[in-house]
Amino acid sequence: MSDIDEQIIAGRTRHWFEINSSSVKNQLIVKPLNREKYKGLLSDSVYKSVGDFALALYRFIICNDTILLTSKITYDDLRRWHLEDDRNTLFHNALENSATLFPPYITDLRTGCKEMLFDRRGSYDSKEILLSAQVDFNGAASLFYPGVMTEMMKVMAGPFIAIFLGTSYIRIHRPDDFSYMLTHAVVHDSKLFDGFLSDKVYYCDHNGISVVNCNT
Image (cartoon, rainbow, N blue to C red; front, side, top):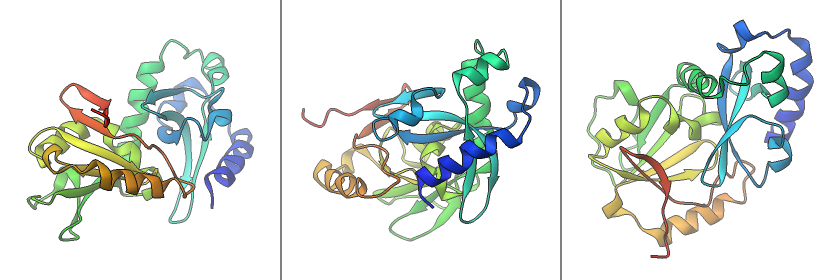
C-alpha cells in the first residue's frame, strides 16, 4: 500500500474515534515525510523540519506486517484539545511512544547481524550500518527517538554521517569512511520510490543533526 493510500484511509478513519486531550498524548507518534512531496498534506499538519523533510505528528491507530494506519494531527486538533501551547511536549511524547511501538534496530551491512540498538551485544567495526525500527514503515524516525543519537555515537565511536534511505532506513557512516559520490548515487536512486525522504547528507554529533555542505 502506498503512502497516499495510507493517508486516504487514515483521513477517513479519524472520524471513527472520539479523541480528547487526556488520551491523545499516549497515542501520538512521529512520521517522517518529504516536505516537497507532501506539501499539500503538511499544509495544516503539526510538524518539525529537519533539512528537507518533516517529522509530523500522527495519531497511531493500528499496525501489522503490511500497513501502518495513522491519522495526522492538525493545528485545528491542537486548538480543539487546548494543546496549542504544548507542541514541544507533544513531540517528546510522540517520540517516546514511537520508540516503544517501533524500537530501534541496527544492522551491520558487513555481517548481516541485526540487533536492538539498546540491547546489542556485538561490536560494530563495519564502515556501514543501517539504523531502522522494528517496523520498517517508520524506521527513519528512529534516529530522533530519545537517546538514539547519543547511542549511535557510542556504536560509531564518535560523530557520524546519516543518509536517509527513504522512510524506512538510515545508512550510518563514520565521517572518515564517507564517500559523497557513492552516497549521491544511492540517494538519487531512492527518489524513484514512494518512500523517498531526503537527498541531503546529515552530520550528527553531541550538538544534534545538521545538513552537510558537500560542495566544500
